[in-house]
Image (cartoon, rainbow, N blue to C red; front, side, top):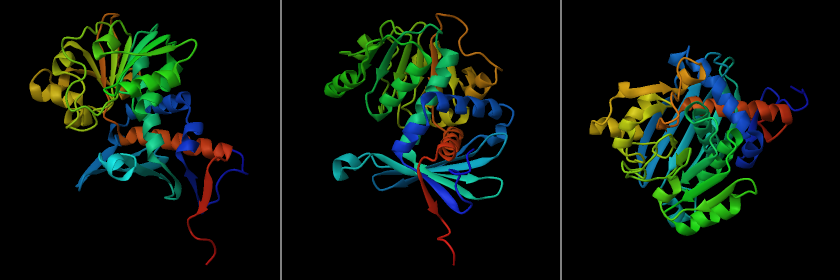
Length: 339
């Protein structure tokens, strides 16, 4: 690490969303998560923690975690979620910050934008799971929901699979068309689909990144051999995958308890379609090689992602290390200088 760009002992690094998008390429984020989850397999007590509060018009969520195994760093993410924010105030639905601290000496290290960090680590987590759960020669994908998360998902999946055709669907037809136009490439065509059924027909990978409160993937859909990354349902009100599909699938999760409490798994468990012991593996077991994601080409594999403090600390620590290596971001003297 070059001494010229390493922060002084009283300085913290400030990283904007733009900084994070430059520092955390999909490859960097995916490898950071792979290393972190492999360490978590032998250090289960290092699973992240979450806390939620209800406020007028929305909620506040805190996710935090120690870097598994090494305990080198601690990160805490505070997000305020106000669904009417865009309409009422012209502000993003979710806003917040991530704080990173040295867990060995207690020194605050960095403060960074949570919107970009969450988008990057959510997509990297799905891509990591896809490396275990999708067919290796996957070339066809579908993205259901063309909001802010879709771009991150597209970049992450393209970084690990040679995708050639992608179909997208959104309840807002114009948004799906704009997404397809903006992100289509010569070697990877993106086209809007008229329906979810048309979008998912024959695909190898399907990503659902919506805010839906009722299943967007229903029991009647033919998803034989597909890998589904369900990343939208991060609380008990949201619901993307029908319980009947969960019953037919080989189920993977990022955090078993969190998914059982608030992910698509929670709906399947409450309906009686599956039990928690029907989950085949979590990311720690996959990253450490303890279990396999896909066993047969025709398996329907569903990855239920709830998001966790483990993912946040992995991505935030990687961003901080890249920032100190390259000098990215701003430096702020938290002590205020000499007394």
